Length: 324
Ligand SMILES: NC(=O)c1ccc[n+]([C@@H]2O[C@H](COP(=O)([O-])OP(=O)(O)OC[C@H]3O[C@@H](n4cnc5c(N)ncnc54)[C@H](OP(=O)(O)O)[C@@H]3O)[C@@H](O)[C@H]2O)c1
Image 1 (cartoon, protein in one colour):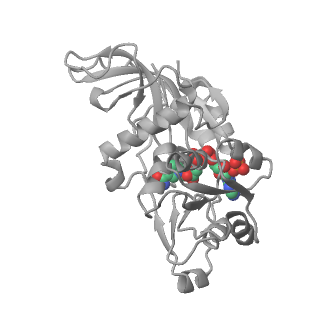
Image 2 (cartoon, protein in one colour; image 1 turned 90 degrees about the vertical axis):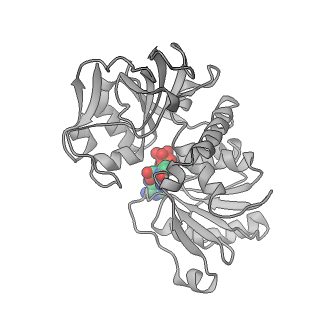
Image 3 (cartoon, helix red, strand yellow; image 1 turned 135 degrees about the vertical axis):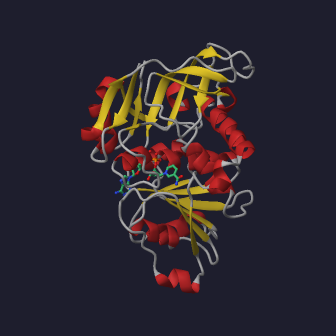
C-alpha cells in the first residue's frame, strides 16, 4: 500500500514523498477498511507541511485530512456501513493513502448520485461555511452577509449555504471574470475588491445593514469587508490566504464598534458538535447532489504524481489526489 508523508517541514514540492508500506490492518469488530477514492489537498495541509499551521506533527509524518472512499471490509459488529458503500472518512486522518482502517461509527454513507470529486471536499469547507453563517451572528431571512475570497471552496460554500438559509450574500473577488460565474452559482452580489467597494456594496444592497463579515484573505481585503459592516457587526476571520496581516481602520472599531473573532473548525466547541456537524454535512451533500454547491476541480493526480500535485495546489485551484 502506498501513502504520502512529509520527510521534514519545508516546501511541499520538496518534502512530500511516496512511501510503500504494509496494507492497513484488517478491521477490528467495530472498524471498517476504506479504499480511498479521492482526497483533497487543502491550504491547511500546505501550511502544515511548511510548519506554519496550528498543528505541527513530528516528521516524518503521514499526510492528508479529507477524503471519500469505498468500504472494502467491515468488522463483525459493524451495522452502519456495508462493503461497497461510498463513505466520507472522518477529517484529521492521514488519508493521502490507498486504504485506511477507521472506527466505522465515524463514517458517513454517501449518495451514489452526487459527483464523488465534489463529495471529497464535503467535510471541511462546507461545514466551515455553515458554521460561519450560524454560530456568530443571529441572522433572519433576507439578511445580508459579506465575504471576501468568494471563489474559494469556503466562499462558494458560503454562497450555497446562504441561499439555503434564506440569506443574501455579497462576495468580493479579485478577478472580474468570476462575477458572472459566481452569480450563476447563486451569489446575490459579486464585486471586485478594491478601495471604493463599500460605496458599491451600499449602492447594490440599498444601504443594507450588514451584520456579519467573513474574512478568509487578510491584508487590505479585511478592511474592504469591515468597511461594509453596520454598527455592532461582527467580522469573523477564518483564513489569511494573502499571507498579510489583517488591516482594519481603527475608526470602524471605535465608532462602529465592529468586533473581530476567529473561526477554526478545530475549536472544541465545533469539533465536538457531532449532531450539528452531521446535519450540516447532510445539507452539503444534498446541495452537491442538486448541483447547488460546486467547486471547480483544477487537477487530479495519483500518489506517484505528488510533486506535480503539490506544485499545482500551491499555484491555486482545487487539486485532488486519486490514490487508487
Ligand atoms: N479556519 C478554518 O477552520 C478553515 C476551514 C477551511 C478553510 N480555511 C482557510 O480558508 C482559506 C480558503 O480555503 P479554501 O480551501 O476555500 O481555498 P481555495 O478553494 O484553495 O481558494 C483560495 C482562494 O483564495 C484566493 N486567493 C489566493 N491568493 C489570494 C490573495 N493574495 N488575495 C486574495 N485572494 C487570494 C483565490 O482567489 P482566485 O479565486 O482569484 O484564484 C481563491 O479564491 C485557506 O486559508 C484555508 O486555510 C480555514
